[in-house]
Image 1 (cartoon, rainbow, N blue to C red):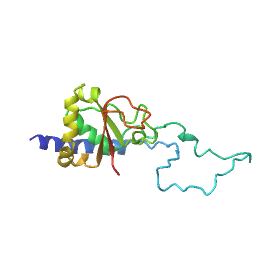
Image 2 (cartoon, rainbow, N blue to C red; image 1 turned 90 degrees about the vertical axis):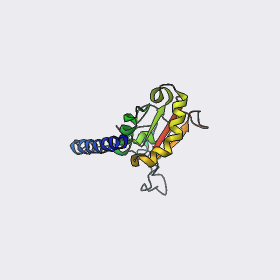
Image 3 (cartoon, rainbow, N blue to C red; image 1 turned 60 degrees about the vertical axis):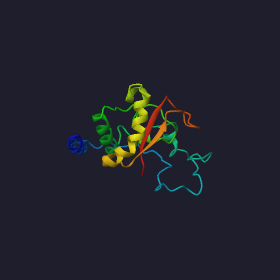
Image 4 (spheres, rainbow, N blue to C red; image 1 turned 180 degrees about the vertical axis):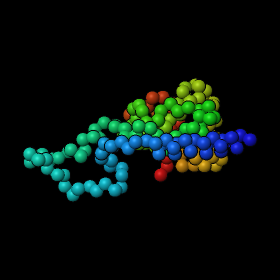
Length: 172
């Protein structure tokens, strides 16, 4: 019975998000240089600015700092969040907030489930979710492409870390 309800919920959310995408007015996007994209051709040499006295860094300027291109998570992540929400698990972070340089959060491809926000401070509930996640992925196709990373302790080398959480991102 629960599986039927969740399947219906999944289909309903898919329909709603599809209709929302169709109704959105096109917004002119700011062009941001993204070094992670394979279709970006690297120049053989750095172009010189118009004054001729230094490098032309204009195409790199928008990436100083972590600038979020996404106003909301991508559709696939939104559907996954809807499913988790139906289980009583809400995200602690999606596209907003501060994340490490190069984070998939800035492109709407990742979200966090925080100990306090998502699991009510219950460490055991968080641990059970983490252990059960592979089974949830087999049961719910919308979760199959998500990769879960345990960040309950600060990962080595991460400059930005706001506390115990599980990081989930689309695995392309």
